[in-house]
Image (cartoon, rainbow, N blue to C red; front, side, top):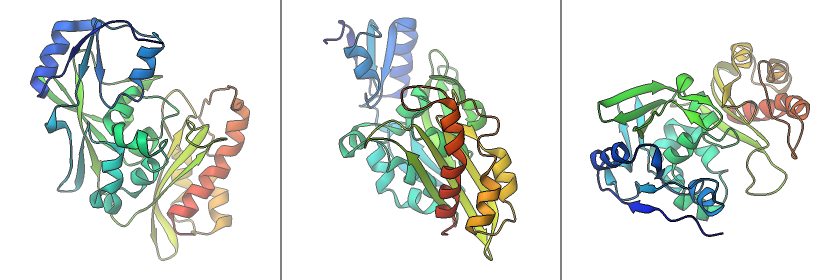
Amino acid sequence: MIPASFDYLAPTSVADALAALEEAGDDAKVLAGGQSLLPILRMRLNAPEKVIDLGRIEELRGIREDGDHVVIGAMTTYAEVLASDAVREHAAVLRAAVAEVADPQIRRRGTLGGALVHADPAGDVGAPALALDTEFVVTGRGGERTVAAADFFHDLFETAVGEGELLTAIRVPKHTGWGGHYEKFVRVAHQWSIIAVAATVRVEGGSIAEARIGLTNMGSTPLRASSVEAALIGAAATEDAVREACAAASEGTDPPSDLNGSADYRRAIAPVLTRRAVLAAAGG
């Protein structure tokens, strides 16, 4: 299907993009990598009067270290995240999740910021961002504000990015020395996650000193498995101990029921996938 006609704008600065958003109001859609928006336009599920393409704004690209954070521009592609030594060293679970996104073609076009703002609960980058206590830099005409990961995801396809604002950067606290793993369950390759678990773990002397667990597609937003995190502290990094700690992985979740599986099915397999993710992250 061919999209409805629209005006196309390609600003070269954040200021110009914000000005275009302000002028267009509700009649505009923002284009990042386009992996989510373009199919929606082609199916005419949305018909904006203007599309504002952020692809020419160089200040939104790149990865750098800033003290105890790794800062990732919102228009940085998945492929660039995968190639980053800083992400590999300081945010291993994010790299592990990005490696599971679709295929190489999508990873070369899709952007980290675009996926986070789209906020599909089955998307692969929300859970690791939540597990890493990521901070999101949101910019509007009045300036910048920083939103904690716990406050960023509001509901299905809804985030803290308001009307007339842009996500401009992702600030990831360094988890140097932490292991990371993303356990994704799908029926066919390149599918959206039926359920997935992002685990980042710090091990000392054979025991788990700290753990952060994010769940994908177990609710309308990414979720933290807080009870599992608490149970893992001090546990031996062994299969039996980790299995016991991960038994409550479905606690407090509200997974969907769809053609891929019922809510009860997702609740049943969440502890299994969490155990696998934690053991892999711990090197077990």
